[in-house]
Each structure stands twice: as structure tokens, then as C-alpha cells.
Image (cartoon, rainbow over all chains, first blue to last red):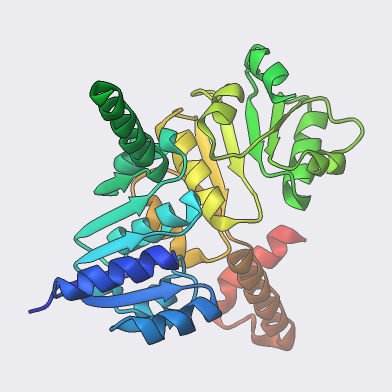
Length: 140
Length: 168
């Protein structure tokens, strides 16, 4: 059976992820608070798009969160991402949860709260740039 | 401003109120008037104008889910933390941070949606829910009305009658 992924929030990130996960054979459901973004996503993405606040239990229920194998929270708010994934885990028993976190200091706390993978765009990009810069130095 | 506060010694407040809205400001003001050591946290510095003129506690301008801000608030096992910002998810996260990272003595969070309390599973965090409080109040009013209609001799209504007497 196809693995089901729930993507909550994030416009361009959700679109890019949905495209690549879709190509990898996942069944995609997207939840987004913004109606205009939902319309764009529903045209571009092969999957279900739901307009609503992913931090509300009834919206997650509409999105069949209980059937999802993986939930990824991509909103701009760390608080929203945490609550969304805690609901996915504790109310809908989603196996695996992934969060983006804006404040890198919160990475450990998110893990303590049961989020399986915590990614900080700031930290990741900083590391990549540093690696590039160092490689540049070595070359020069 | 924040730098100056950061250098200051952490206040050993026995109550930390996160969110200086109407409820937060009212609570903080009355606790301070009772002589408690109160610290109020809000990201908007203008929010502190809602505190009563006699408020004698500390104010910290910053986010209630920021580690440095919470450190500055000096939360420990003797502290009661009350999370009452207007954003329920901020209340949830601030409550969980103060509970698990700072081991606050008592933690209370306001939820607008009572269903969300599942996220506090096994964490010993208390919740206040305006919807539930209002619903309970309406139930009580209805029980009182039933009693006034003379249905009080119905044994099922004994509890409601007792409650009404206790209030009188």
C-alpha cells in the first residue's frame, strides 16, 4: 500500500516536497491556512489539499491524520509546528513526525516532546555555507 | 533594553505570568497587590500599560517561548507559571517548556479548544478553558432554574440544589 504523508503549512516548501514525495510514490495530503495558497497547491500538486488550521483536531481529522504514516510541519511558527505534531502523535497516532524549527535553540526541546526529526533551516543553511566557504579556502 | 535586562540578576518570582492581555494583566496586578513576587512576560512592551499602577513586580519584554526570556524569569520548583497569551499554541508550548526544561512547581495554561488538552498527557499541566467554564456555568444556571420550578424534590437534582445552597 502507498505510504501516506501529511504536509502542514509552508507554501513553496509544501509544493516542492509534495512533488518529490509524490514522484517517490507517496500519497500526499496538504493542509494550509491560506485559501489562495490552497488553490495554487491544488492545481500543481497531485493529492488532497485541505484549507484550514492544522493545529485544530477537526481539521487533522478531515485530513485523515489517523491514516498518515508521516506528518511534516512546515509552518512559520515554532509553536504551531510543535502543537500540530503533538496532536498528530498523541491524538492520531501518526508513526513518524518531522518539524521545521526556526529557533535553533529549540531543537532539543522538540525532540524531548516526541518529535522524531527536527530540522533547523537556519542551522542547516549555515553549515552548508560554512562548508562551501571552507572548501573555497582549501582550493585557494 | 533587552541587553540591560539580561545583565540583571534573575528575579526569583513566585508567580510568572506569560501574556499580559486582559486576563494576564488582571491576574498579575491582583497577585502583586496580595504581596506575591510577580514577573510578567509579553512580547509587546505596550501591553504592560494594562497592569495596575500599584503593580510592583517585574516585566520582561520578550517571547514566552524563548529560552533566554524564560531563563531570565528565574523559574524553578517554587514557581507557579500561568500561560495566558491570546495564542493557544504559544500557551501550550510555554507550559511544556517551563514544565520540562525549568521544572516549574505548578503550570497552568489557557486553552480555547478543550480537545487540545491531550497534548499534555502525563505532563502534570493544569488547563483553564473559557468555553468549559462558561458551559459549566450555564449548566448550573439551568439546574437552578429547574429547582425553582419545583423539581428539587427529584433526587437527581439534589447535587444541583446543594451547589446552589453552597453559593448562597
